[in-house]
Image (cartoon, rainbow, N blue to C red):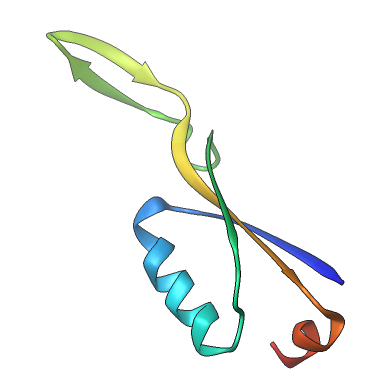
Length: 73
């Protein structure tokens, strides 16, 4: 049994789900997470006040698959 974990941008979720479905993966677990990497956050205006957004919303995708399914991908 293998556990595969990926952190993706929210708008890519449907693309990832459809690709996994096309290769035979039947189930995934999705969690909303926050973090930063190369972007290191950005500034936004909220009600006229500039706010530093340090953590960017992401989606954590986890796939539990058998060793045989893992070798096929």
